[in-house]
Amino acid sequence: MAFLYETHLHTSPVSKCAISRGSDYIAGYQDKGYSGIIVTDHFFNANCSLSKTLAWENWVNSFCQGYEEARNEGARRGFDVFFGWEETFDGCDDYLIYGLDKEWLLGHPEVRKWSRGEQYRTVRESGGCVVQAHPFRQRVYIPKVVLSTGCVDAVEVANGGHDDPSYDALACRYAKSIGKPSTAGTDIHDASDIYYNDLFGVYVDKKLNSISDYVNVILNNEISGLKIPEGRLDFFGTENIKLPFEIRDENDKVTGRHWREFI
Image (cartoon, rainbow, N blue to C red; front, side, top):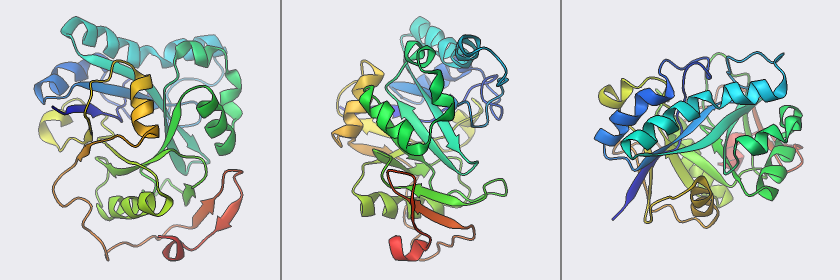
């Protein structure tokens, strides 16, 4: 028996771009046969609706609201809800953080000023993991594509927010080239999409009892499958990166600028 989990989900009013509150998602994901979801709202330097002038404790309490609403509704309905977040660097590259909690955030206000390398090292030291989200996404608000090769434990190779599946094909090749596990997530912002659009996710062989279990699945490369539309990763030969491109190492040093030599 396989267990299916949503790994990338945003809530209102925490994520500025989200429409639905955390509690709105639970019934729909249950109907679609999911075993649980991970709430990954946009974090401090990402597309977050919370004021950066708030005291840190107040900011963290407000940030966790979407997750807590989802968790409470999940508990009422017997459905698992786990906590994570999505951070952005320089408006370019995004990272899904799993395995840490509200108490950890309250004790680490320095998270707001981390580099990619500092984020990765501290998250790992604290028992979490880092997944680069939709690494080849190209949109008007993104100034460049950045691959942080030394600061990730896995790569989101399929993302439901993409209108161009070639971005996912590139991400799949990237994950293989650096020898990292592949994940998939819907990147959902509106609960109505559960019924009107394709859903993504990961399959695992054992039920997750905590977000730490998911961290272990990633670190041990134990994802048993991906829920993605058929043929989603088959768009080889049609890829084109129009944005400036950077490859960065574990120290945030740029080591390359030519994607065709790397992928």
